[in-house]
Length: 103
Image (cartoon, rainbow, N blue to C red; front, side, top):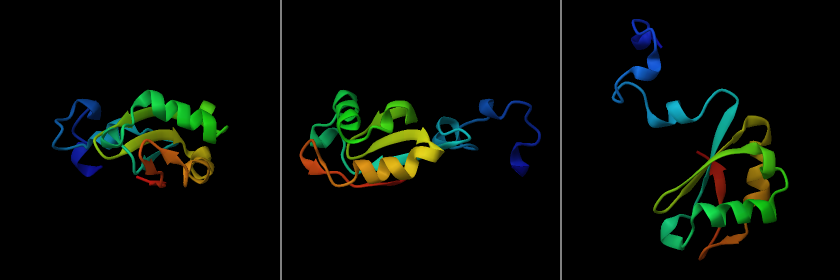
């Protein structure tokens, strides 16, 4: 990035220059967004139970789970993202049917 050339350590650049997602999703990783969140009664424990039940590939592929008000974000290994989205899509979690897409 041409704006970061003058910085020796870009991770210490003020937040207005880099985004949160740039810091959280590394090389070889992909972020998946689920359309369910805390408002639907979902928390991290329920997400991990859902992953265990519906996707055998999730066991070693999911690196991070973040649940916010209306969405849940999963950081996963790039090579497993497509398989995970197929496995997780269309099942019930909390009070809604899950739709998984790339974030």
